[in-house]
Image 1: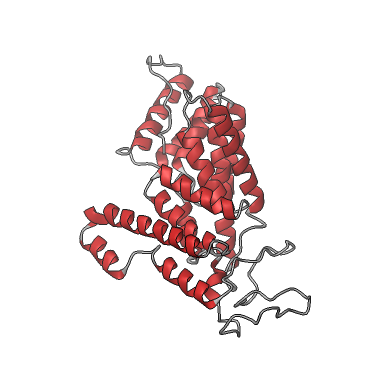
Image 2: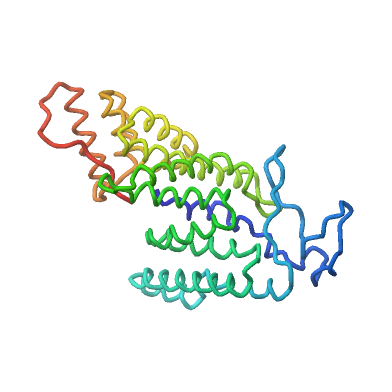
Length: 327
């Protein structure tokens, strides 16, 4: 369920990117102390064109740098969250080094965010530095660092839907039956995922002019991931009816590209409820979405074969029901 990187690619911009517009809205320097708008509120420094939000919903003001030094420091730190041209060239020249380069970029992004937060401990734009760090570690499957960076983001903005989804996913996938605190962990992750399905409509802000279809796709993908987390937790708690409902919602929320792991878990949820014909249909879909040489592909084919034997009346080999891979 590593589709957050794809959600960022859908937009081709960073959500909450308004800090990049400092000085581009007719103000090259911060406003004088006490400068106010017609409403009597102090004008945010470097405020640009209004951010785009869903019609009928209140706009959430993006975080902004308040001084030129703060903005300059943020801009320098932000550059650290992306690979340099030299690193990109090295990765293309030697794909085997890509993981090492990604790790270096992720570590650099985290350090830059920490250094900025130390220098500007009250800055609104700290969140804009920890989010790329979170994504970088998430793309590397570094669960510990992903959760740590995600919790940093949530400490600044507890309603951020992307961070809510990513942290809840890490918790859901890493919690084991033997964990003493599994119930508390599942409860926390479930609440985060549920909250994300709501805040995705109120707490995502996009650059002015972002095409509506990209906004809709980004929101749909985040919702899909949130329902996937909820379904995963239900499945692990043996609540298979609830798992079925949430996993189906995940697929329905973003039908253009269903997650094979979600599809297989849905088949297993139906299987666990003895709904073998329906489970077989879904298992066949999981097979279609995967290659046989992959772990998820092997598990999908094993589940399909088992269900074919069950629905066809043939003897079933003595083997356990397939379990989806751990992310």
